[in-house]
Image 1 (cartoon, rainbow, N blue to C red):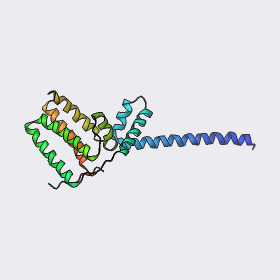
Image 2 (cartoon, one colour):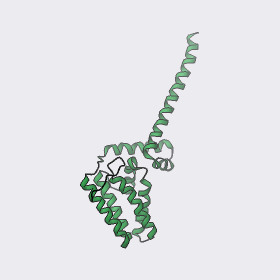
Image 3 (cartoon, rainbow, N blue to C red):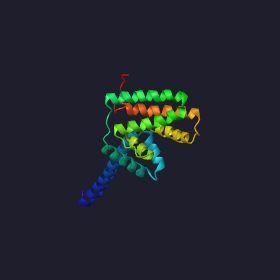
Image 4 (cartoon, helix red, strand yellow):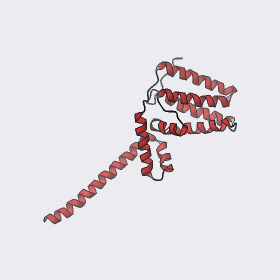
Length: 186
């Protein structure tokens, strides 16, 4: 076989193999992002101009998150937050709107103590999406009702739902950092 014939066979094989490796790498990266971000992956893709733009955005979130100093709570802080949450839930019976506002403030305070920046709701959701993508829709739903309630436009049922949504994120943030809630000693 001549050198030209060998090159005509080898070059296309190398190109096809390279393309296959690139495709496999992109697929693995996509699967990793889907697994890490959960439903937030699809939400970000839907809101972006392209899947590549969305994945670029998600990787940027990861880089920002990696630069943060997220830490588990010490047991005393965890217990204090658990007691405060119980008080907020009890407050709901007599003052549901106030309870929802207090739940929002408590979640924000907990985020801050864990090391999350709290400079605005949109940035909060982006920062939380890296580790808490599965519960992020709860936070969005709760925040939406909390916003309605500041204008006295939320129903009692919506306020109750907001408390349930806040509790879901609250419990996850109160956990030891890997999704397992630590028992409260109160």
